[in-house]
Image (cartoon, rainbow, N blue to C red; front, top):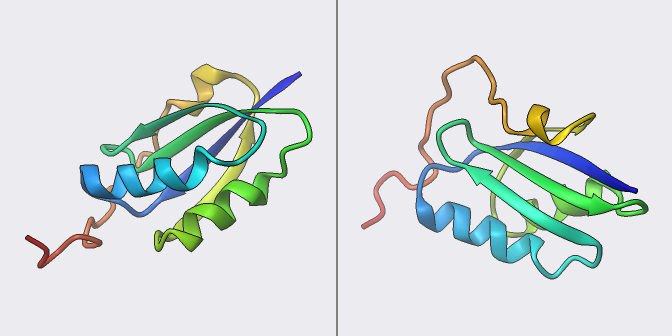
Length: 95
């Protein structure tokens, strides 16, 4: 059975998204990843047995802040973003 995990990750550009994707791809059992910069969310469909915190630890190791994590019931829930506006300063000052 596949599970869908959703993470709220502080990121603001394609470079941030690429770093997050590169951190998650090597994790055994990850079937697919969806990253939405607008909502700052990462959704991962994983095989049963992949711990929720395995992905958040990989994201943190890549230098990104995981603000929340959750198991969602359906892939549709995973792509709905938060209703709050967030600052996007992780790439401020970078060229």
